[in-house]
Length: 194
Ligand code: HEC
Image 1: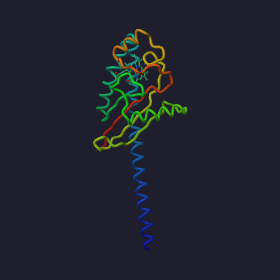
Image 2 (image 1 turned 180 degrees about the vertical axis):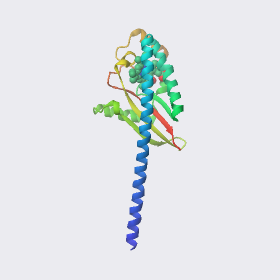
Image 3 (image 1 turned 90 degrees about the vertical axis):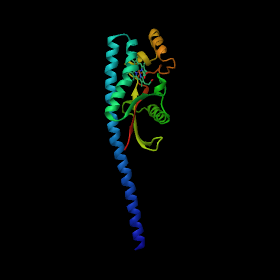
Image 4 (image 1 turned 180 degrees about the horizontal axis):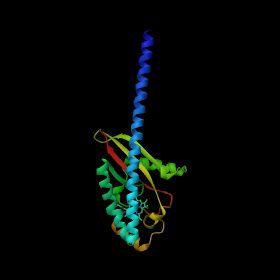
């Protein structure tokens, strides 16, 4: 009888643990889907602004889009959605976009998946982590592939005049020499949890 009770208690504990794992997994899945939607909306707006900027003037003008509009759109969208939105990469143009330790780890994992031939378009990672203050935060990253339109400013053969303008604004620029189809960087989203 006693053994039966103990077995029942063990089974019940195991079930509770399993249920907790399933619940956390469901929460991560749900938050990942929401973060993906935010990243996709941010990407669509950025792309539209960039194409507009490139059409309206020289690429030098479009640099303003990347420098001023990208953080402005991110701030507005983040305020609406209750999260922080940014862009990062293993090699960055703006040192303010440099990855933190968690982001660097995810970027390295993305890079490894690229080496295995995985599709960059669908590469993402969501996780609940403890912030410095001990509170839970949800963190999400979505890979950004290097497109043909990005070659002008991040590519292997950047126009000399444009390269000079870029250097003037970003003396520490490391974000050049990317081949089309390679991993340029990632969107990064942080959401405080209740
Ligand atoms: C007109 C030039 C220009 C074009 C075209 C351009 N970028 Fe950028 N990109 C920049 C500049 C300038 C920054 C730095 C923005 C900042 O100060 O935050 C930047 C920053 C970034 C960053 C943030 C990380 C970092 O390096 O600081 C990513 C990611 C990025 N670009 C991806 C892309 C992708 C993908 C494309 C093509 C769809 C693209 N860029 C096209 C100029 C450009």
